[in-house]
Image (cartoon, rainbow, N blue to C red):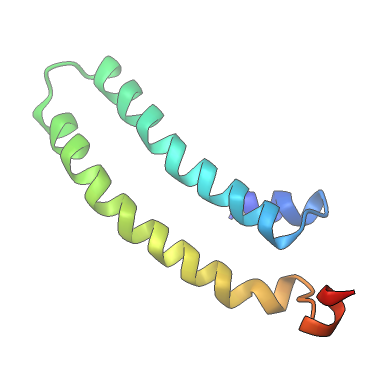
Length: 86
């Protein structure tokens, strides 16, 4: 959601906003896992989260892609095929 708001704030197009959304969503999960392992060494729930994290992340990325496709015509001007040919 922050990426969507940032994209609209900086007047980015649909493709750039979607790229930013997927990049921030996919990359931050690995960083958070690394911080959790460093902050809580030896805790089995952290290791469980490391295993479950990717299992949850992939469906979330799928839901994000469906959400962004649904919002595409509402938040961004979609060019018609005649306009894109010019």
